[in-house]
Length: 89
View 1: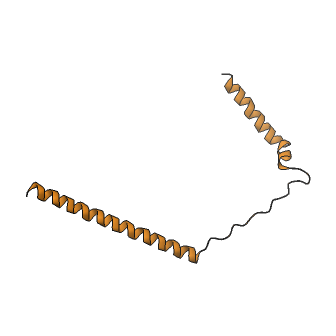
View 2: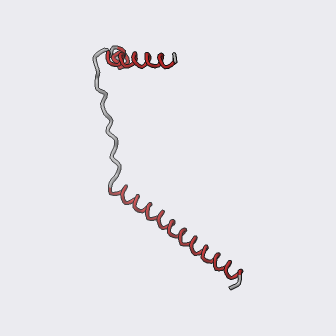
View 3: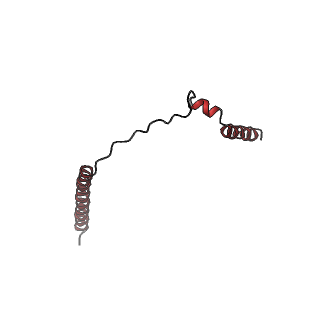
């Protein structure tokens, strides 16, 4: 075989391969869109349920309740203490 024949065979094989891949991916896109339409038609997305805010305590805001939480104050104090110890190194 001549080198030009090998080159033409290689280009021919490349075009068939690329054409096959392009065709497959195009069909895959259409199939995915079709499945998406079927699923959204049969199983529509439910409307989100909004939760009603739970009253924490009458007359207090969440910030005021958090400011008086002893466990939160202890955690924050420990975090500040550890940060200051690490900065002193």
